[in-house]
Image (cartoon, rainbow over all chains, first blue to last red; front, side, top):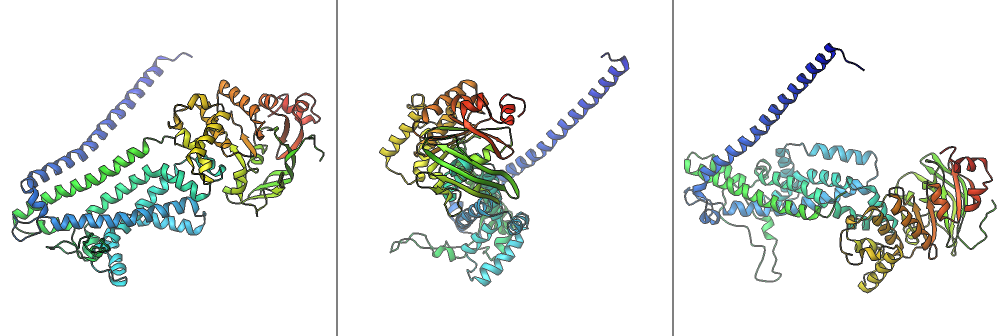
Length: 309
Length: 259
């Protein structure tokens, strides 16, 4: 078929227009990416310049003080670590278990539908609401006190929907042919889950756990709501004792503070020196998050290396 | 229904009906399965041959709203394997399956073959080693993998993966081995290897194979059942089906006039 001259002109014009749009989008995309990048780096650099002078061993092993140069974050980072342990120990097993139940066991009926809708909504509930719920449930009703246990459970509740959702998503991505292969060999449902479904979806589950824990470590509002202290100059009871049975869980019921609260406390004071402390604590908090994510990413890499569909 | 099988029976299907929810997929199916013989199920897509095959190891029990009627009697103990009182896991322990697409577990070659035995509680290393080796020998894969049993199964080629799946199914000494279009995802060379293997295997196990490749049915099987719209139209010795079919529909199908 022969094109007439004006048709070719028409096509060229159209191509030029499309290319212009292409180019415009490229600019827009780059610009948007840069915004995130630049803001993040400005934040990091600002934080480092402010906090760098206060970083050091004494800062890590000192309790808060009313003298800014003597103040440290010992109780805060220990508190954060312990709270995160409780959070991980509750949210991860419960989240994975409910994800497995919903995906592999739960029949598709109105009840599981309701749970599913609820789960999706829970992920969007503001964290302060979790704080109020936890205050009522853990502190007043279950009388767990304004303790590490309460704080950990609260954050556990907060990230539970993320763990459940990521568990379900990664379980869903396992081809059904793998399950059938297992069942055809005479495996029970539990054998199939334990030997195949869970190991093969662990990478995806860990991603959800990473996102959840990263969010939990920075949460302040729900922790304040359940009554974490803002000034605390002692550590929780040690988990290991010299007398039988050598392991103690008394620390679970001790009062605590966490890094974001310590930072908030310092930043709200008028003295400039305390602001430097807050920045230094921010660096440590970022570092803690980074270490936590690093471990999870490493595990995910190890697990995923073997599996490709 | 009279049967062309005059040999020792391994299984007998009597008036089998099968329903996906309310849709009837199999209608009054009768069939006899001869011991240590290969029985092929052929027919156009959607005729119910795979559905029928998956009744033998109760795969349909994995999904809701499926229903069986009738009997599939397994000899010698005359167990009705589709009886709801019979545990599907027990059935699957006795009847293995090889699927259409190779579906090895994302684990090592060794772990793939040993899995069926581990499910049965076998933990002794010496017995596992021995049975894994025997199964890989039977599936003609041993020479290719004996030096790399701990390698990942996904490193094998498609044909090797399918033979691995056969080894996995054989390791547990099944009484019947079900093949669901085992070569449809493979190239011609791998296909002929698998076909040879299937013929070899009938010395040790009764085989039922679903195939939409008529030449394959003609090459490997002793008996062939032609299915159409959920019914068995004709069942006879393979050579009879392919040379002198008694039904017009069978003839039309095997001569390629439809399907």
